[in-house]
Image 1 (cartoon, helix red, strand yellow):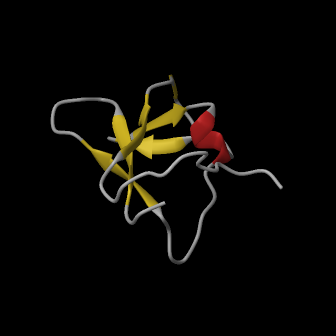
Image 2 (cartoon, one colour; image 1 turned 90 degrees about the vertical axis):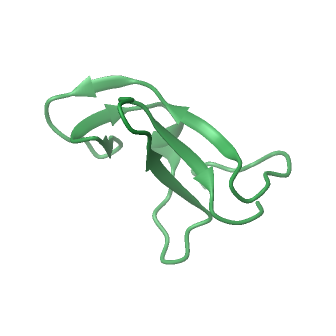
Length: 74
């Protein structure tokens, strides 16, 4: 099974990773939309969609990168 899995405990609100990567003009199957740009990030490409997600992407004002944070204890 492909996906992104934690190998240690992550507290709710903890940063899982920073979405820094290549900015592409068009979306791809694995890119993530941050501030109107398509970011291709290796680990981000393994994030799975879920109706009850354990993580979310947040945008920081005036910063291109997004943060992937834990919505609950992982």
